[in-house]
Length: 125
Image (cartoon, rainbow, N blue to C red; front, side, top):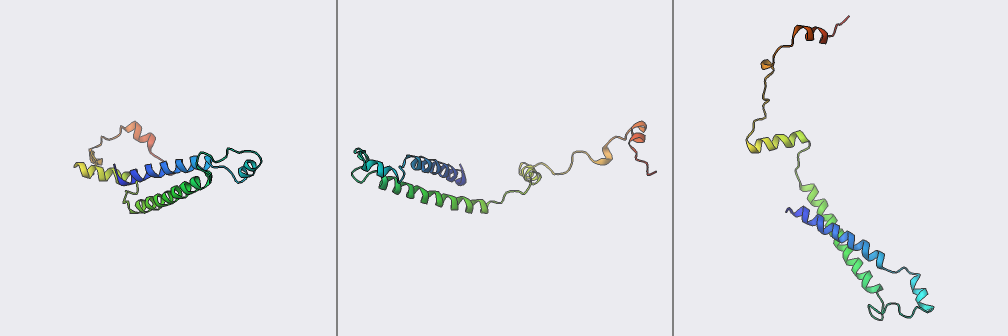
């Protein structure tokens, strides 16, 4: 598996984790609701609440996402891929030993019948 594929998989995983973490986090207005009677807020992650844990995890994942983005951009600039499909086909045929010359020469083609060649001819009148 090429390095670029591995980094793309890591990049996608980190992106999905960032989305999940952002959706799990509470907004700024949720603390005001906890002050008016939501006594059980933040007890799972300690007395400081889940804010610092999720914020720190999001920052770490964002840094990893940024790093994988830069790495993918660098790797994309380093590839020397053919510029067209025809170039790619010629390279593949050279690798397997096929010649790039056409199979039929224009002199080997049969002549058109007279009736077809008369109809296909364009008059300059």
